[in-house]
Image 1: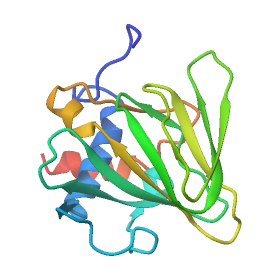
Image 2: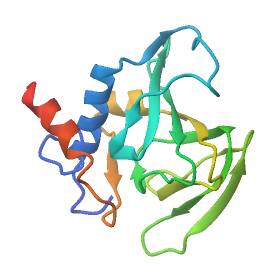
Image 3: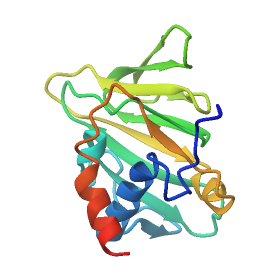
Image 4: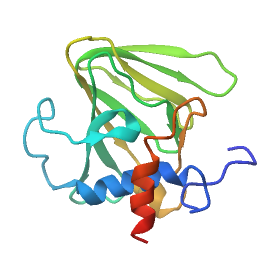
Length: 180
């Protein structure tokens, strides 16, 4: 990380808003816990995550203190927010077809084409964004990350790309900050 980067675990960080939005979402829609995620990941109901341009749900499965997972659904023809994070992530495509762009600052973008059954991993702290190529059906992916470990170590950070609109984050952050 460069000299200007502040970890999101510091409340003064502008990137804390990404984590605050996630935390508020998880207060409203508690992560699914237990040994098994009930239901079918391809069809389970998912609440909207407007600051991410998608729907999603987190999982904190029993016995895991280092990793967690979330399912995300991209709308037909839609895209996620371009972002990067300090966590390692495996992304498994549960349903749909599309592509992701991945790059570090100052480097050319790489395109990763994916479809149901694809597994890939965007590098740590690389910008990435996911695109659903189907104009009629949503796409879903399961992301498994070491978020819990990095949060315990106060090393977790999520940064939204500067060219991405931040307005969708603000209502979630205001609620989270208002509750102290």
